[in-house]
Length: 301
Image (cartoon, rainbow, N blue to C red; front, side, top):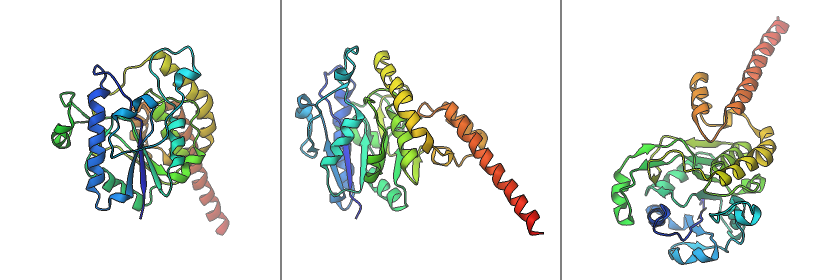
């Protein structure tokens, strides 16, 4: 039996925040998706949070220990949102025992009822990491009571990655630095860690498995937070992961080279210069293989 721990990071917000309506929808969708699975004990829903946020968490979730620091403690130049580090959230998985796979989703990402059932199928097919793209739904949805209509709404596609499923043993290899959640480069950090250390990652870009209320593609950028994550990623994370990159583990690897190039360059979570470097290495290795085969055949004559 495969057991999964799914963690989210709830936050108590004012009514003016998009999360005010989104979080209850997320909570209910996760609870419904767990019930959809025949054997419910395969999935355990967890939260980690700051102490002041505990009051909004439904009883269906197991509450792990509180987060004790935020980006504001590290970078005193920042003013505003008290955002946690993804490293601190993932460390809470150490409080979870007897599970095989871990899931992290942003707290505004809701699940289709059959989400976990499909995830189990991907796991049984041999994938040790699964990254899923969400669908985008119109903002007129505002209540968990409307979930049946959200399930029926196909919505529109989204290019980014915000659902990450991986074998628990991979966690010890991750390089996460001081990346904070809720800001660009979180997705890039997790994607590049998974393609570095997973043996058989799967990118699910065309399935209706998760959704988000709101049609925006690129989030509103809070520049000081954005530049914190950007600098942290390119200075302290990317150089350590780069030696582990292979073209075959990145999304779109199975496409023809021209389609692969276009999609790679348009995706905000992966980077064009990295693609060019990996494609060059890929072409070199293929050419080397062909030339060696010609060499061996000549020698056999």
